[in-house]
Amino acid sequence: MHITRYTDYSLRVLLFVALKGEERSTIREIAERYDISRNHLMKVVQELNHKGYLQAIRGKQGGLLLGRAPEDINIGALVRDTE
Image (cartoon, rainbow, N blue to C red):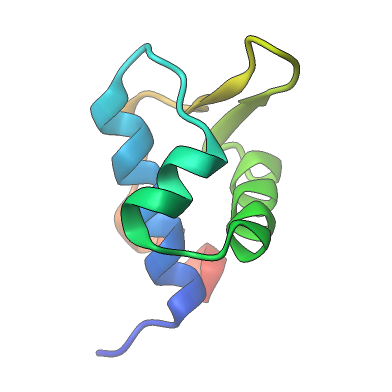
């Protein structure tokens, strides 16, 4: 099975944010870690935020946190939502 680049980036974002726990992640950190365009990553993050997978907090102390508990995130559902 092949997944789209968009889905791949979605999985990477969620994994990165989950591993940071309660510490907020930034799009810049994720883009640098995975060598992904920040502009493209912003689109991915917007959709994940809209669908409730992420919580995006704006402002100086902002960042990204998981929008759901890790055990409530179903990988199959995520793939269907982003394909």
